[in-house]
Length: 110
Image 1 (spheres, rainbow, N blue to C red):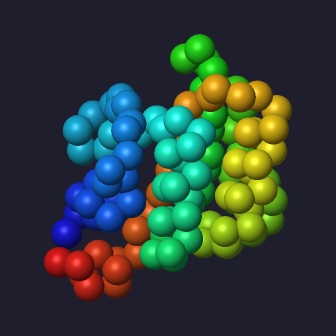
Image 2 (image 1 turned 180 degrees about the horizontal axis):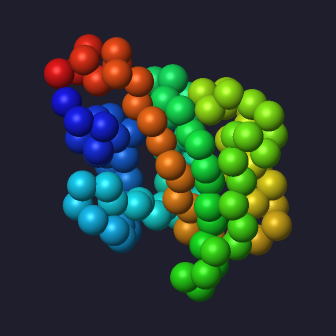
């Protein structure tokens, strides 16, 4: 199973998103409520999150990385804190992130 297939099937299922970019590496954008669900599912599976970038009126509202907070990409504390910070600064944004699904997890679901 490919990473994008896993994300579509197990993390992004039943959520509304918009995408941009190539089909091989699309960028998904979620509303605040749906992105919160994405982060819960990411934590459940132990998937790495390297960046979170919110957008307001199609313009970037900043970017936060796991390295900014000196945390491992799988540490839910960093992306939870980054999301909460962005959420409190501005409502109504769309959120995107970069993910890495562990190879062992992909193999288990193949």
